Image 1 (cartoon, rainbow, N blue to C red):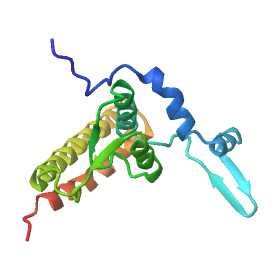
Image 2: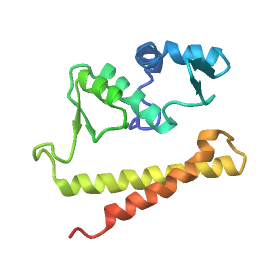
Image 3: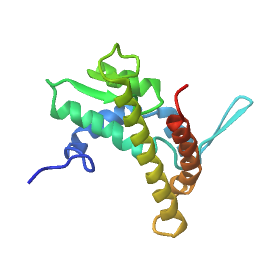
Length: 168
């Protein structure tokens, strides 16, 4: 039977969890949380949302990248584009030997193929966001992240229209 890893990773979550926690943990955030999600610094008051961080899809993608590197330490690992808009995370993935294939990567892949992968992944992400929004609305899974997914789905609809417009 063929094994599919795209939904559950390689089962290495326990092994990568300490590393991810150490790299993305913040003592300052802990301090503000302990103070009831609010802290004053001189004339500035900082308030944190009770739930924040990477969205589930990005969190899972970062976990999968770490798991892939752990599972295949001697193999070349490529990602088609950046999986998160966070320079620290992308820099760390690069330091781990993960290569980002970007549109200007020197002709290593067909730009048309890249374009259609981008269309597909944008569509897939948009459908996923719609499903998350529906889960919140119908009461299956009530969560602020699920509630705000609908807003992002509309943004992805615009992204898709831009990706599908004829190239002039």
